[in-house]
Structure formats: C-alpha cells, structure tokens
Amino acid sequence: MALAQQVQLQRDPGARSDIARRAAGSPALQLVGRRLLTAIPVLLGVTFLTFVVMNLIPGNPAQLILGINASPAAIAKLDVQLGLNHPFWDRYWLWLDGLLHGNLGTAYSNQQSVNSDIAQYLPTTCWLLLYALVGALVLGVIVAVLSARKPNGIFDRISLAVSMIGLSFAPYALAEVLAWVFAVRVHWFNVIDNNLGGNPFSAIKALTLPAASIGFGLFAVYTRLLRADIVEQMQREDYIVTAKAKGVAPWRVLVVHATKNSLFTLITLVALNLGTLIGAVAIIEPIFSVPGLGAELINAIQINDLPLIEGIVVVFALVTVAGNLIADLLYAVLDPRIRYGSSGS
Image 1 (cartoon, rainbow, N blue to C red):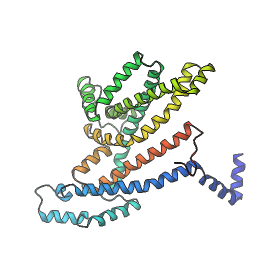
Image 2: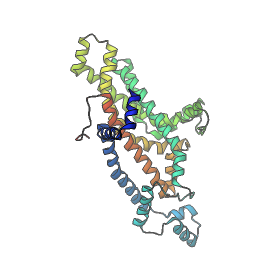
Image 3: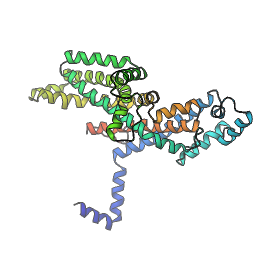
Image 4: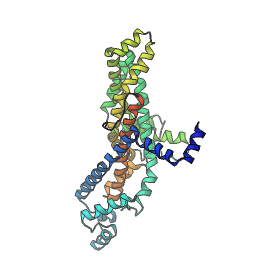
C-alpha cells in the first residue's frame, strides 16, 4: 500500500497538493501555527522589556569592561565600537533586525558572536533542565501513586513530611545543604565538577547535585498536587465506581484510570512552572560552576552585556513557549476526545 501511494504521488501532482491541504487542515498543525503566531508578540514584549530594564540600570558597559581606572577617551572609543553612542530606539531596532536575520549580535565582553556563545553553553543547560524535570516528574508520580493508594497511611505521612521539607527550602539554600552533606561530608560528589564532556555516567554524576537542588522543590509540589487529585478521583468520580463494580483490579483502577486522568492537572502545572525552573537554573549553575546559560546570564548581567543578555532571554522565552505547546499537544494524546478545532485554544 505504501509503495502504491508513492507511485501515485509521483504520477499525480494533484495528489501531493491534496495531501498538503489535508495536513494544513490538521487540528494539531493549526494549534502549532496559532501558538507560533502567539509567540511573536511574546518574544517582542520580553526582549523590549529586557532592553528597557538593562538600559535603566546604572553603569556604562564600556566602563565595566575597561575597569574603574579607564580614561574617558578609552571609554568613549569603546562606546563607539559597541554602538552604545546611538540612541535607545536605534540600538533596539538594530538588534531586532539582526534577530529577524538569525543574528543575535556580538557580546560586549569577549567580542564573540552571541550565537556561538549560546551554542556552546545551551546543551549543558538543556541537560540540567531535563535531568531536574524528568527526575522530579518520575519520582513525583511514583510517590503520589503510592501515597494515594492508602491516604493517611505511613508512606503518605512520610511523603508529606518530605514534601514539606522540599517546599520549605529555596533552591539556593538547598544547594548549599546538598553540597555540604554529599560533597564535603560523605564525598559522594564534587562541589565543582566540570566533567561534562566525558562518558555519560560522569556527566550525570556532575549534574546530580545541581539537578537535585532544582528538582527537589518541583518534586514536592508535583507529589502533593497529584496525590490530592488522585485521592479525589478515587473517592468522587463515577467512572472509578463503575470500574470497581466491573471487578477491575485495584492497582489498575488506581494507575490506569485515576492517575491517567489526574495527569492533566500535572501537565498544566509543569507548563506554568517552566519560567520558575529556568529562573532556578540561573541561580544554581553559578553555585556549582556549571558552564551553562544560567551562569553565563549572571555574568552578562554583572557587566551589562546587553546583546548576550537579550540572546539568552530569547532562548529561555522560546523554551517556555515550546513547553506550553507540548503541554497542549499532550492533552490530546492523553484524552483522544480533546480536539483542537478552529475555535479551540
């Protein structure tokens, strides 16, 4: 059948156009298109706000780069080289024009392309984000299901205590505690471990403490939210009563029916928390000297390196938009009854 379709496509150009029209009319593709269109004003707003805020911060980037002993002539010369002598709107439109052409400009600090800097540090940050998020989700779902199996039981009370600890610690404070316990006292990890380019096991070990610092708070939130939702599903929903009446095994009712329907709330929370997750990365990476975009962003803010800051902000905004898009698509995967029509969100 596949071979016959390929032959038909080769012989009939109209068939190709018909397939293209049907693909364009796909609700999922329409949703992706709408989200991409929505991302344009979001990115413009974020970049403009960042540009305004960084220009309101006291201090001249040329002065910060050259140091306090630099002469006024040297500062003025560097201002011209960096384009800082132009008015605000001219600099923003010039940067925006470069963005539309895929060029994020040149960093003030090292005079290298912002594109190359981001390409160098982005993979590390992506792995750290993925490690923290997947770890928090997997452990959160497992603990929530086990807690909901026997509400107010021993395991549920222990998970509640652990979750309260996770909710009580800020990521930067937890990072200091984890570093002291697991690096200084028991020597399981290194406080600073840049062995990210070796084998995968070494990279995972190097990112474990930073990922735990970021993910522990997320794990606590996900666990309590999902546990409460599952318990409510098990006690109040008619489809649960029907499944039990049909003789479905208790574990199957809990995992397949209640947990699957409770994942909608969890997916929404994960999408909403992406901004917080990215903010935590910017704090945690410098603590463990992780060579990622978060640490690079903090360094750029210290010297008011506007092109590099704007480039990193654009990347983080795109990650947030993509995360929300994936969440929307997952709704339809979990529940085939959901359809994104022309009037859908």
